[in-house]
Image 1 (cartoon, helix red, strand yellow):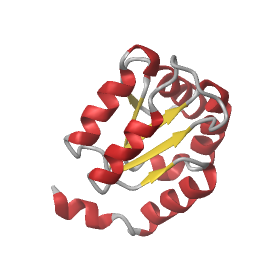
Image 2: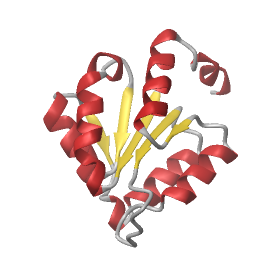
Image 3: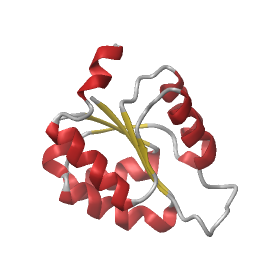
Image 4: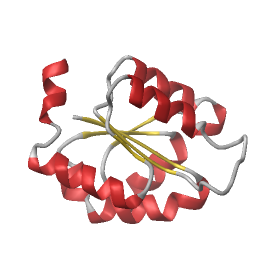
Length: 131
């Protein structure tokens, strides 16, 4: 399956830790991420990550296009809900698109852990029937 990952700057360490913890599950799937997040995941885990541009320079748009084509099966986006920064990816637009196309999305570590463990159990295999 294709997994999309985005993390705001203040959440980069958290996404690295998450990917280290679940590296064995992530390794069985294709991982897509915005530029800096993808590079940091690769450095922390040695996993191959398909990288878009940095979110602030269009990577969030590239990410959203993949959502609209339904080419992502799950999205994890860690963001800081108390911080609004126009240089950060547009999280709400991505969440709305995921909802529109029935793509499971997690915006915090608790939900991300549920999704990744569900992915490992096969709970998201229904996504394969859409292709």
